[in-house]
Image (tube, rainbow, N blue to C red; front, side):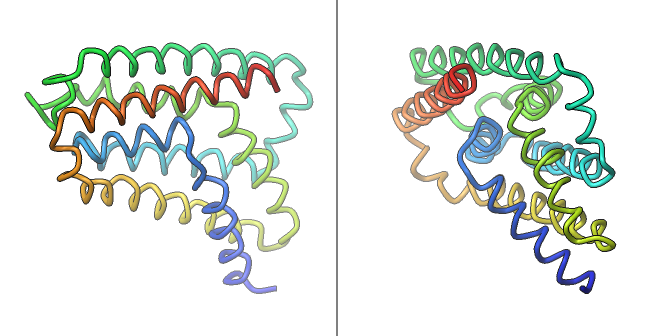
Length: 202
């Protein structure tokens, strides 16, 4: 088995896992359309995934089995945040108008945007399941090239978030209308609440 084969497998598996619509992806898409701090958001998501993938490839996934309460704490913390963030998006949709105009007034501060991005990333139990547990377990199948599998998976994450964040600006003409932003906020809010409900009822 070559490093290229293992890396390619990691790249494809990573793309298949993160391509599904989720809280983190919806946030990156929203920031991309608004053209607010896109590069920092993309790098934050990609670097966070890389750290978690390295942890999984290094065998850190076994920790979840050794600490029984950790999974529940991650689960309910993630549910609570998704409910609150979804409510914030519904509130933004209700306000409409100037609050949803792309890049109006410079947008939200970078610290606030990155804080939300980190919470959506590290507070989502699915992120740990996909990166630490699943990718970590799959990397063992490519030993002794597990590191190449992990590197490919991290590259897949970077490519996906870059395409999502910077490609979203192509939708700019559509979202020049305030009503389109209202629809987006409602869709994002519904996505957050649907994920929260799925986690809580699983």
